[in-house]
Length: 116
Length: 114
Image 1 (cartoon, rainbow over the protein chains, first blue to last red):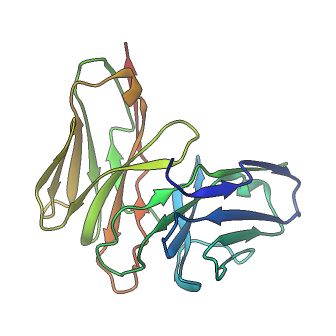
Image 2 (image 1 turned 45 degrees about the horizontal axis):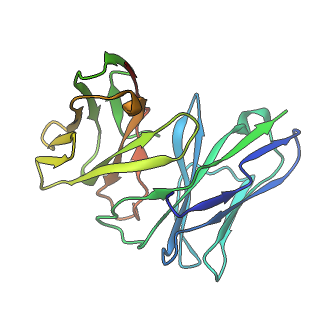
């Protein structure tokens, strides 16, 4: 158990819909990262938050947004869903948001999104 | 885009044998990490090697890093059926805007048969 909690574990929805994925980082970790894992794209970094502020952006679509709340939990919002958005979405946390020598990330078990 | 590329894509071995997988990357790094993922589960950190280190051991794992060739290898000795998983290398790029956004390779799928 990494200490990172993600909900829901599974989600099935239709194209055009909007979903929210939730992540609670390990106790004390200030950084939250979101990754998307799909068969064709592999693991893609989406976005990082550190202590409530956006710190880095990766391959995140404009239809996707995220935020980190004062209690440090984070939500990833996916809207106008398309078939290609079907993937495993992982949240990870780490103690710091330092630019160098980040150290390991602690991953949650993921939220599996299926768009029909 | 993926920074690391693992080789081979898949590896099938018998219990007791060693498993070796390689990772190549493109840009300078702060560190390189190896993660393991059981089917459909979250990734678990295995080992981190910093750019100024050449070799590191952890239990049955041995990692090497050659920054001149931009490559790393992960060796699992005396493999067990429980080692069946996908293994990913991840690089922490040495860029001012990296902010620790690890970049993962496509992974090596390892199957260990009893």
